[in-house]
Amino acid sequence: MENIRLQSADYEPTLPVTEKSNPLTRDIDRASASSIVKMLQACDAQMFQEKSQTEYQRLLSEEIVKTLMEVAERVRLILKDPQDSLVVLSGCGTSGRLAFFMASGFNRELQRLNYAPICSYVIAGGDRALFSSQEAPEDDPTLGALRLKKVSEGKKRVLFIGVSCGLSAPFVAGQLDFCLRHPDVYTPVLVGFNPAHQARNEPLPGCTLTFRSVVTRMEELAKTQKAFLINPALGPEAISGSSRMKGGSATKILLEVVFSASFSRTPVTFNGILQHMRSYKKALDFTYSHSEEIAVLTEAAGRSLQCGRQVCYLGWGSLGLLGLIDASECKPTFGADYEDIRGFVSGGYKELGNNEGDLTLMGPEFSISHDDFLDRVLPRLTDDDTVLLLYSDSDDVDEVAKLAHRVREKTPNIHAAYHQTDGGTAAQQDDINKLCSSTINFTWSQETPKRLQHMRELSTKLLLNAVSTGAHILKGKVFKNYMVDLQVTNSKLYRRAARLLQELSSHSESQSEEALLKAIYQVDKLSEDIMTCSLDTHTHTAGKAKKVVPLALVCLLTGCSIKEAETRLEHQPIVREAVEACLKSS
Ligand code: F6P
Image 1 (tube, rainbow, N blue to C red):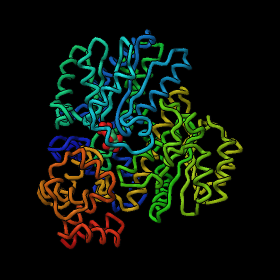
Image 2: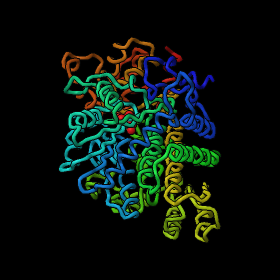
Image 3: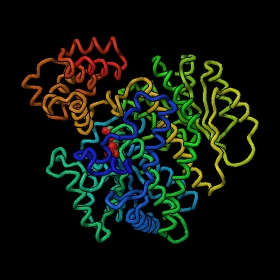
Image 4: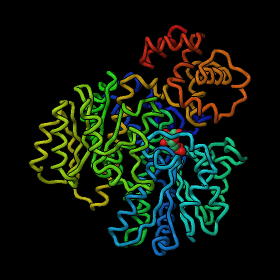
């Protein structure tokens, strides 16, 4: 009951659900690896909690299931006319990465079923944002609309599915608005995890619209099925605002349920959809039935980060892709370096099939194949680095064994997460087990092959979110359940940072924002010039600085200069401890 109250409207009433702090994880920063995993489990389980009378609609609510049925029927219409029709999935950050992940997966599945591919994706910042942190394009509604227009050029019917977990990204709002202005071709679907009235109400850059005003227009059209809103509340994220976690998982669940129903040759039914959703709950419970093993892995990853070394995910197929996605979000969330947690996938860009092809030449962070790992990372690997193999019995286990041998020559700190179906274990698997210091063996009972793959993917996502979040917590990158070293590289992150400073320092809103600006521009006094710069300039400048929020907080709590705050943080590089020390002395 308490749990439900704390997720409801009267808890932190000024914040939307996706930005609230979750009472279940208030002490996550001081928890052991095993308690961290248990807290994440409790938070993830909230996704499937049923609705109480006064509550917002939830994942399993009747309204949501009905909307999913309607959207599945729309996808069916597109399937009948692949020449002139298209489904476009789009989003920013992890929402855009999942748009890519699912569009590619659905197209592959369609080809297997002898249908023409019908899905495209748009990610804010283009393909480089698939595995690197590019937050600024999220603020551009015009760019969003242009990218959508370009990808759907010449089509007569387009189902646009925009994902913004917080109902907040201007890029997506611009796309939805574009659809609403061209109803003859476009039908918009919005996926997010706040009730409509909590959609962001700040004017979109360059116009008077807000995300909320776009949602209000969609709500009106939803009455006649000319637009669709899929926006169940999931409860606040384990790390406040970290929508890659539950938000990302629920996005994957919802869209897979819709597409599976529309690809099936049987009618779309309420119970069919509901049962499918419930099977993900089973997958979640099954994943966390391995929580002690997940904690071992989290602890190993945390040790590597604590001593300034790295964690590498070496994956195969879609599980490898999930490794890339998980790793890429650590930079904005925890102020991490791209090398702290890195993903590599067997086959690299060939496996990906992304719009812009091979991006290796764009810089070292775009090297994503196992060959790149062997050339660039393996030679420098030490016992302090952690390597995690991600694969299943449908991958080339011989190849996994070979790579495991190569890694084991450099470090004993190699681990595996292996998915298999009921049945015996291949000889190579025994070999891999012997090489690894821990193996999580997920043995799934028979499901249809496609569903099984989706469940394994969700399970891998949960596992990786736990490992990367837990490792950064153990490194001291989280204070209470706040991301205290976040990057301030777009307007949402800027507002989140200012709010966090106000919350932690108990200073006024204006004092907190001033401190933030001083830390961004590295000055003790704000000039007229700085004060009149646009938010865009602030976030652009913040992208070049490090530890902006910790610096601002130390200044606010101690009244010291930026230089002194820098020295303090150099002496106490563990951000959580630096913050605590200041709080004690303030
Ligand atoms: O701005 C960065 C970020 O917060 C990512 O962490 C997140 O994946 C992305 O924005 C998208 O957020 P949303 O889905 O709420 O639009």
